[in-house]
Image (tube, rainbow, N blue to C red; front, side, top):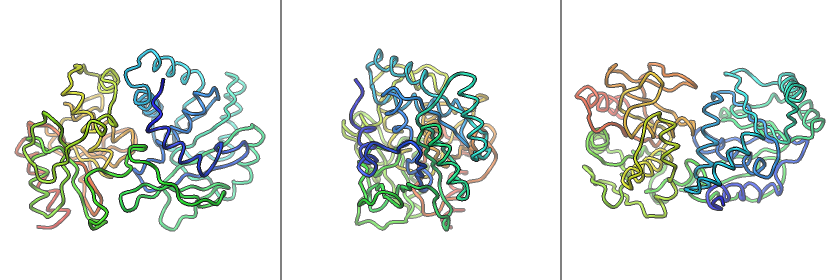
Length: 397
């Protein structure tokens, strides 16, 4: 049986504002800053419909089909835990009732969506009751045509994107996710009038980072890390030199080289980041043992990445795009959650940013956002210098 925790709490928050969800013929917009968790909330919403037997079409504007499928699989792994038989049955049912389409950055207008729905209906008799378009805003002038199309096909249509500062969200129902004072809130901007609903901690990728206090100054940079020797120790030392606050997650049996800002994770908090080791092994294309220590390291990395807006990793990028070592999991989490992500490749001796589906050379610059700093224990001198240069470049000498 699936857990009733994380995904259930997130969906209940949405349903508090929209009982029963979007109706056929409605066009919904879910907006938020990058990395808050809007994509994850729509995956939870889609899974609720899929597990109830409905057909769902997921259209990804930026992500690849494989990346979206992995995000669904990761969510299901978290929902079902170690109940492998139930998880496998759920995954099989989801695969049968879901279609994923990637536009590779192309815009989805009313004509393109109409053509896609017609092709799916004519060729494979696939008639979705819910369509999710992640990564794009609808054209305001096309809203009546989109509603007419949705009503004709008896489906609900969700859009999710990060709007520009002065951009007016489009949709007959508009919800926003906002993070303030250590809490994540879901707000009704247009549609049903409702007070903001708090989304419980752990429900989405970046809700209520641990180790922060409401009375601390907001808007100041925070380093989330683990305090282990090597890369994490170097990030922490640089943070201390530049007056940047640290939150270093730890757990029983974990040896920290840095204890400044130590945050011991409880068993409940560790369980929030639980994931199937088989899934991690498949995602990273390498074998991981079932030891309790490995599992707890992965759970700790989950908290580091979840809490941050920017993820910085030192390691080696492999030909398949993954990153070596256990901290390669932090890279995969950042990609699944659409975090801003850079890797310093110690072999190529340069910074690389993840851009949709490829690594591109680019030097990072930090501001007031929270960031995760992690990576290999075998830090080279040039890797250490790259971390030091990053802090000087971002926060001054």
